[in-house]
Image (tube, rainbow, N blue to C red; front, side, top):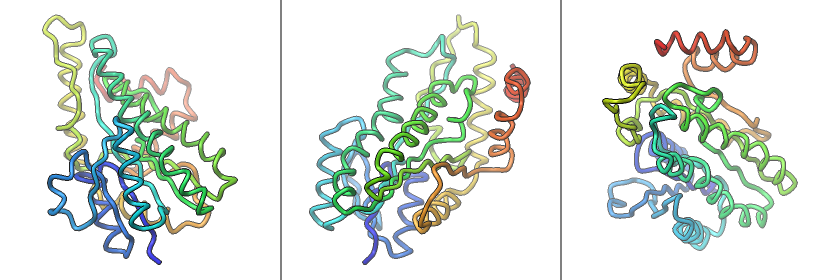
Length: 267
């Protein structure tokens, strides 16, 4: 029997790459998008789900379970970028980002856990970010939302382990996707104290994404994790320096590490 996989945010980018790859490997794949309007153009099943609207989460999960009778893997991939100096970024936009990147994935986990407990098995992969391991300038809210999801994953994994369920983090670095176009960019305000440095860093961030890795690398790592009997809690997928930056944060004094980041971001 092929495993049934539900992937949020599967209409583009990493989510779409994972969905197509797992489908090619024989999995029964359900991807989600905020709308089913273009469902026919995807090779996998597409269901409507907006992680910021709990009613749509419940409806989508119930639809999958009603059709398949089970749900083996949840890949919490839906997310949204946000940039801007903390002082300049509207608080409402910060809250909106946390609704998508943090509270949304929690609601999806809540929706699938009863079925996984019933099956006495299941795997939840929360797609976080290497940025969640450090506070990055002009991406502080994004770093915070993904870092918070990392910690929630750790806690949830310990809570549900007794039911035969594993909850793991998969933290990607920069991948060549359309995430930059979907970000909320705090405007470069003319009277902002951060105007010049923020404008420079916006261009730098976009160049990182356009020069990023192929999303198929993430898809292959996800398959490897699904096929692992006793998966780790934390996985990082990215370039050598991206992953090494996490190691450096652990071993360097705080001020030394911040200096490295500030030099990189020309601050």
